[in-house]
Every structure is written in C-alpha cells, then in structure tokens.
Length: 462
Image 1 (cartoon, rainbow, N blue to C red):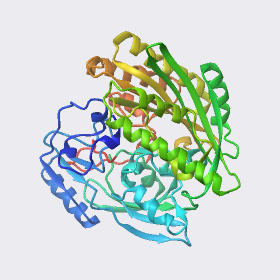
Image 2 (cartoon, helix red, strand yellow):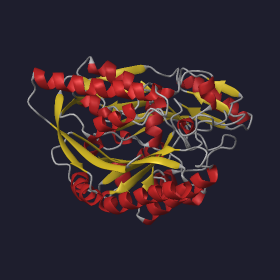
Image 3 (spheres, rainbow, N blue to C red):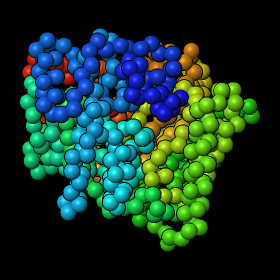
C-alpha cells in the first residue's frame, strides 16, 4: 500500500497512522476529543485545557508516522491542518515563514511562482512543515543542504505549560535544537522560518548519471563512493531491490546522481514523457488487484532504469512501483563510513525474515546521502546516509511478535554501528534503547528541563 491510498482529511483518518500501509485491516484507534487550532493563541488555550484535565495530548499533522506517535484510543488530538498559512516570503533574507500545519508541497508550489524553492522537501505531497521538522526530514538534496531541520532558521512553539517560545540558530539555540526532530515531545510547533534557494524545480532539467548493476558487491562498492563523495551532483538517490518471481529472486540496484546539463526542448520532452509514464504506472499499480503483477514489474523497471533526464521536482517525488500491496518501512540514519556494513546486514536481516516467517515479500533498500550539522552534532565533515529498508508485508505471517523481533534486530545493528533511527518509523519500545537510537536525545539531554505536570511527552507531529 502507499500513503496516497488513504485519505488524510477524513474523520476516519484520525483513527489511523502509517501502520495502515502495512495492514489495511488494522483496527481503528479512535480519539475522544479533537482540537482544530488556527492560531498560536488557539494552541495555548488547547494545551492549557488539556494540562488542567491531566489528559494525554497527541499532536497530529497528516498522520504519516508509524511509531505510535499520532493516534490513540480515547486520546485528545490536536490537528494542525487548519494552521496552514504562508505567513511571509522574505526574498531579501531568503526565508519563508509558514504555520506548522502548512503542506510543504503547497508552499513549494507557491514559491515556484516567484522563482524560489525549499532546499529539502519530502517524497509525499501531504507532509506538513511542523511534522517534517519533528522527524528530521530527508530529500535527494540532503547531501547538499542537510536534513529539513538544517534548513529551519527559527521557530515558535508552545510548551506543555502553555508558554510560547521563539528560538532559532542564533536565538536560544539549545532550546531550538531540542525541539527539532523531537517528534513533538517538547511542544507544538506553531510557525517556522525556513531557508529558500533560487531554483526552478519544474523547468530546469538535470542529467542522470546512472549506476546500474545486479551484483550486490559491485553496487555497495560503487554507491559507497557516491555516498561519501557526491562531487558536483545536485541530487542523489539509489535503490537496491529484491523481488520474488516465479523464476527466483530478481535482484537489481541503481544509483542516480543528477548533475547540471545544458537545457534544450528535447531534454524537457524526454523528462515529461518518462516521468509522466512513471506516475501513470504508479497510479495503475495502486488500483490493480494484487494478483496482477505486470504493471508492478513495469513500474520497478521504470525505477531501476531511471530516465536520463529529470526535473528537480520529479527527482524529489517518490514513485512507488510496489503500491497496491501492504508494505512497511524501517528507516536508518547511518554514519557514511559504516554504509556498506549496515546496508548488507540490514538487507540480510530482511531476507532471513522472509525465508523464516514468510512475513516479507519484496525487499528494497533506498539510499540517500546526507551532510547534516544536526546529525554530526559538532563533528565537522562527518557524513551520514539514509538506509530505508522498505519491504512488502504478508500481514498473516508478519505478526506483531515477528515484527517486534525484526525491529529489535534492526535496532541492534544501528546501535552497534553508531547510527540513528528515523523515529517516526517503528522502533523498540524500550526508553533506554530509544535514547540510543534517537538523534534528538543528546540535544534534549543537554538543553532539556523538567516539563510541567499534566501533558505527557508521547506526542508527535508527522
């Protein structure tokens, strides 16, 4: 299943999160109360009311998380969807200020009319600014600009006592970094000031320098070089795919490095035709029965043989050829120097689970290079990468017990190799282990102070 298969703006959507992409039959978890604030004052009022009643508060954008952050039976939910305004575009200062519930794809479309764009934006069209900031945020341009949180210059949030704080890179930076990538634990983000870049994502065409191989050792060796030294690539993304077929497993890997190229109408035409067909295949795949595999294999071929030319906007978008069947993601933020080791071990764990339990169908590893001050935490020059383990699910076999075992094995590998987890994808439930996996933990420990009683710290915004 794809995130796009489930509407995010209905009453039913409030009872679900990203777990539904792994199991469409998952029971709903209905909240009891829902707040729909439109201003900071509304958020203050809501937080103080909930604190006074000693209730749990959950902060929710569009519900992409799958780590028990944005749903809860009988819970009180604050939905940021009505806090969606673009407050200011400062072209001289190269920033845009938006409310926490603003949809980043809509912000980017507005900026495109002025010749600007967001440096880092999510794969999916319905990600909110506050949600992306609460989980870190990664894009194919993260090797240049970092995580989304690295592009946030300033923000306002309401803490769990109902107090309003404004902080930024140069204004109370300890508090600022504690809130970023904090999965909503420290308060409700009400607005953010974000860096801009001068760019035409829709019309500027980039050339894809494609690495393609069916040999895993070759893929790891060559992609590792691109992860550690992207050179002059403007955008990068890669994927290794392992699909079961009637003739045995089909294993292919590709890594796309997109670079500047002289512009001409033919390249624009090739970009439009290739990516138009790719998106059409993705839509068909979501609508076909699981037994009809042809379009899915064609879609995978489109991904693996990525087009020679692509606009920046088409590179940013994730086209999922496996849409239409249940799937789950476990995302890892790995030190670049441990890339090959963690990649291979994560892949082996998923393949072993497929063999042992039958709970996994296809296995894929998506790769993006990252250069992030937030992740390096003062270690200048240290690079990271995203290793996103994305796999098909057979819900009858991938029981909760089997899933917990798989997650624990993944978390063990990450801890042993000095990496982090993207905390909006399923992790260990142990607070001690989560502290070791969470990129926000050090900032929270350094700058944190006791919260007021009442509102719990298990809130999230995705």
